[in-house]
Length: 463
Image (spheres, one colour):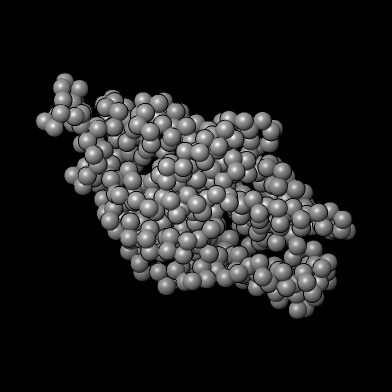
């Protein structure tokens, strides 16, 4: 029987379809090129190529998009009628749980799968992404730590495993090891976008914005190609570096350019677009019509059921576009999430307070925004995204306290942010504005308004 490059058997494969399968795995590993079309071609030629169908189901299920999820379910229906090996049946069981909205159960099954099959690279990467989607920082690291001793530099895919490990190290705060491991992975495979972005995350978390710009700029040819599926997220990282330096106009130019110029309908790209526009709005940039285009793009994805992390980002766009009807629809869906699935629990416990807090902020009810967002930020790492992505909660919370004139909360949050990034102009401006609220509480500013209610301007962001 034929095997993949790591020695895993591939039932139903032929020599030609094996080549197509490997082409797809390679594209998935480095997020470059089209991983789906080669699988379509392989399954057309060899419908019983089980691992090709399992892999395609993973690609669709991990897209967190309703139509793609339906396509994954169709593949699973075929697989449930097939005769499977133990390894294939293990994959099927994990996918079944994933499509049922039980992300942690699926991730746990793949934990045990890779204990038995440490060289199953598809399982490792799918499990790593599941860990990312459920924000399980420890398992982002430990899933790879458990198998790395079984890998060696002469085994194909070793660099990919190192790149994933680098991101897990970063999310668990081991920044020096994460950067070293990410650079090691890139020395072996310069096109590995995940390893590149792991190093970018290190610089973001350490407040090394200038280094981040240098890192992104120097390596741009490796991560910004047209066929790069991760390019928008990496452009988003570059925009965050500019924002942290108080360079909002540069970040807005990136939004208008590589972040949104292609009008991507991919959920992951739209998450980045919403998050960047929201941050830009907080800095006082007039983003105008941009919200409307993005809100329209969200209509085919945001359903209040599949993945609440996406719904929360869709609400940002709907608020900016004045689409109150869609905001209320999603609020209703999140409040009415009565299913017993894990994703329904995420909707009720995490998605709902985040959405309510952001809605309150946008509508000027800053006290309610503080009330909802302060406790929500401590549980938000229970669903979706990275530390860098979830920082938008703390940023909005701090801004709400400032605009609401709550000096004690604003000053405390500013100190908290400065402890993590002491050289950030944004964070220093937060503290300066919080300190200014001392005089505001004794009376009105010279303009007749409280310091927390003044329009945003450059003086507030470049301390």
